[in-house]
Image (cartoon, rainbow, N blue to C red; front, top):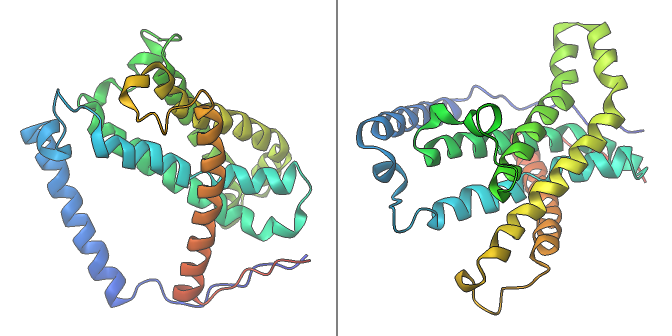
Length: 242
């Protein structure tokens, strides 16, 4: 099977360093503003509009666009589409970074971020759809970290641990598929209990299925964009065998 080419572009360019510095300064200012002025000053949310564009962009869209990891890994390891194996690591990395950003965004949205583990270890809410979404996202983020760990273990030279994680590939893929299917569809199920909040054109009892299918399509689209940008910046190329 063809292997992806090695990236030849430089990462530490003046443009990248300046951009990283600007993002770092902006991040520090955002965090300080969050702690000083509270949730409203950072997210523009209020008690009247507690979700709005913030949740729609961060959770509803962000989680769907990060779905490429479970789609590609399931296609390769569960459905035998081995020709797409060179895309597995980039897809899992994209998913891991996407879900990590979603969790970071939720830290701002929660307000009292230090109580993030509270629903899981103190007072679970098994009847809440959001509890199921949060639990699945947390578990899937952990699964993605383990799935991507072979790359770090290879770099560290830990061959035995790399082989151990490699032997769990199928199990991790199945677990990731189950967790992703549950929370992607549950995001759509949130609106089943609020029919008056949606336009009749968009409301349907099949919203969980629609959300899941949209996540599959959106995740694959993000992988295509990520691969195109990677090729343009680093001049690498992923070869897909026919």
